Image 1 (cartoon, rainbow, N blue to C red):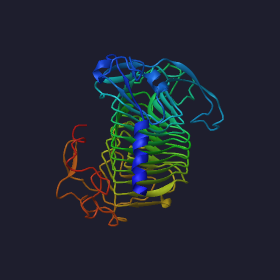
Image 2 (image 1 turned 180 degrees about the horizontal axis):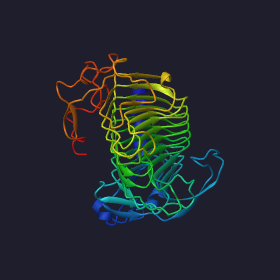
Image 3 (image 1 turned 30 degrees about the horizontal axis):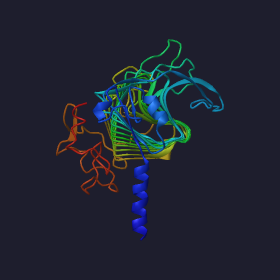
Image 4 (image 1 turned 90 degrees about the horizontal axis):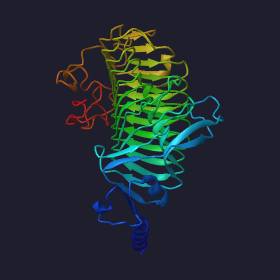
Length: 419
């Protein structure tokens, strides 16, 4: 009887949820002027829809109107009680919606604003299969401008392309980022491509949490992934490249940073600073301009294990020395084990004791299969040399690097080879 009641409840809920269609040709949905079909007016569909509804967007370009938005809290100020003059494009407020485009090559959302798509008090929302572009930077430098901004919301962002949001007045240092989590945001960010944007790829501020996985974050100013203030994040199997800086944990944040390829960034690859707690494991940090990995304060702590940190330091010192592992803090607050730190231009370790041959750390050619192919050859010193308390997917002792550990890339995954 209880099972029957549960099934009936699910059917009632499904029947109550509606589907709205947005596109220039209503008949492509099998409709003709239905009250649930909006010709190119996406915001009208967002306003009309109720909690739990789905919005399907046809191929085409859909533009938001610019609206002033007074942000009552500053996301990245020392004092959050500072009003910020911002703007917003599309708005999803006080409802959870499923928003699905026809694909990143066919459905484009042009935001025309600083907070491009703003989710507020939106629980259970999802946005998928759209390209988001055309942001316009706010003149207030405190505005946390991004293509997607979420606060007090649970939101999944998947299979989206966030690209070419580069507008920035000359006197404003910060640009437009990719996906930003603000107060009360709980985000799942997976299988997206963020390309050529004007600030951080993904940034989390006060009270935000996120699972960030399987994204390619390529080309921008700022950091590829920034976990700040008291935010919490799990970030694994991301490719972060061509930013000023790679992945950073700041403030009192907590972060698990695993199995990421961090490559070709101008400054540092991965850092921990402030009072952050981090687990940095099974990453490949290679060919970054300055240091590969750094401890940047006396107060941060955590574990740094199973990483491969090689070939960093190709440009003059900017934000840190051109070395593999730099200490500007207190390495005694970290477990540092089973890492391979090798062939970094300015040396392997700076301002700390050499960790080679301590707790499983090595310094040796990892023997990758080839250029841009980071799988390990059978004789690699990184095979079965990771922390013995961690297993690979097949149950064997973990390898060092991005294919090792329980969350590693699969060796059949060609995403890395096509980077």
